[in-house]
Length: 283
Image (tube, rainbow, N blue to C red; front, side, top):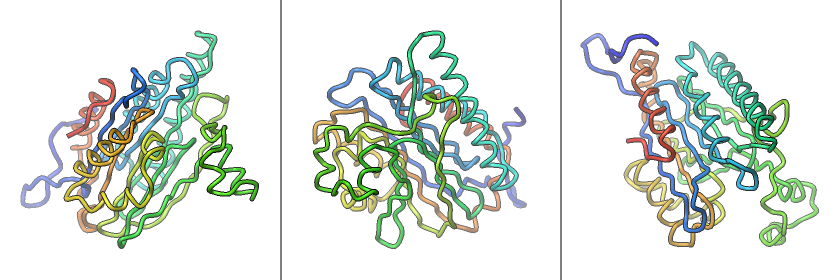
């Protein structure tokens, strides 16, 4: 896998990835098993949340399969290469889940929301209703679009936002990894600005916390503090589902020049250890 020696500049100083990253996950107050998993690899520019489908057997297996495949993504040489590597790992995860499903005679599936960053470019890739938000200039925007039955009805003008809150099938998702022979992903991309903060989360958060409340807590000092605050708020409100939050703040555009070093190997190994363990917060 390469050397474990960190990347250094001309003066010998270690060059950290240009991100402040925090993550937190909790099974909630109703479910015994946490079917969420998360993955962070700052030096590779990959951050993800996967939410195993609670209506099917072994949702935790489904989400962990996805993040384990992401663990081999390695060092990209361009933004296009990073996206190609991501697509390959999702195809592998989908095939693995299809094989497990055949062996068990049951469907396994998981949503996934992934933030990719290469230099000053980012891409959001997702399937299902796990979300990606961006906070910039004091405003919050949902960059992903929920792949749900209720979202489709709202987009077609058949449901209002108020009606959607009590729609009996509001949790029915229309896309997920593992449920079809070919996975369906959606993508949005753009250019980073220093200070951009991204919140990647499972629907266990958004089922209890409004966008404005996410924005309010994004003002906390660090990404770990934001992650912890959002999970704590969800628990205060009953946490009827598993809840997972990954927060990524882009620190400085100039720092991106040192991110292609071998320190990614060390960071990837640490991230994989946390993912395999379940839902531990990555320091």
